[in-house]
Image 1 (tube, rainbow, N blue to C red):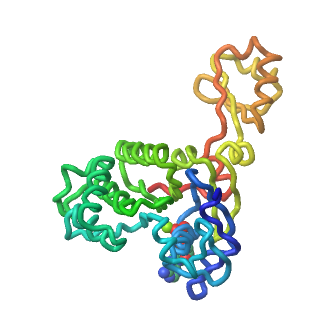
Image 2 (image 1 turned 60 degrees about the horizontal axis):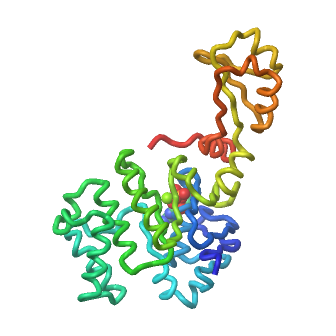
Length: 301
Ligand SMILES: Nc1ncnc2c1ncn2[C@@H]1O[C@H](COP(=O)(O)OP(=O)(O)O)[C@@H](O)[C@H]1O
Ligand SMILES: [Mg+2]
């Protein structure tokens, strides 16, 4: 089974707000899949539909080949989800949060203890095991959120903005854990994020706007399609730059030239070796892809 999530033409409205509009996409087993879009694009609604919390008005969803309408229990066992708003009980300890969650899947006694031990090692929960969730830092809470989502050994982990609001060091440590799990267990990770450098590491990206797909592909495909590449040439006179017969922008210590493809830079370098003594070639970034595909700047979080 190569496709673990298959969405066909789903639509969902809240009253007269059309949140998801004829949406179709696929997620393959083992991939890191990023679902991008500005606030209100319909990401969280789609996730709630995938996990069976909401029903679409139209369309079809298959998770590991199963239909949510007939195999809800089975699908819920295959998916672990971390919603945008944490579902932890803040008045309970870390241990009890995981224990009660596990019990919902019939995991109790020694079996639970084994799983808790394993997850607490992966997520470094040993020292905070007996702390109430409301005494934890944001990063610690997120680690508990993700451990809770994995307590029943799902095949697919859905993370709705898992790192929003966390400092770069904490974000890094959470990503290290996720990447390790992906490597070791071939876990499929479905991610929504506002951080384009996180999306840049994904295998496949779907960009959503007003509930509809407006762009999709690997990061490289999207960059080639939506973002301009550039070359910056340093320590060169403006009269020499003019010889390249390209539109340029003056920047500190040099000149910037935007191009539609890197091969144009290669041609320039070959023809003008004398001008290209100190330079850097920069591939379009995911930020540029997002801006160019959606027309929106990303909001500062
Ligand atoms: N429970 C709800 N009731 C009414 N409108 C909602 C509800 N949840 C979301 N919406 C609206 O649906 C649209 C999509 O929201 P959402 O799926 O949360 O987007 P995202 O997660 O991409 O920010 C937005 O216009 C939002 O205001
Ligand atoms: Mg959301």
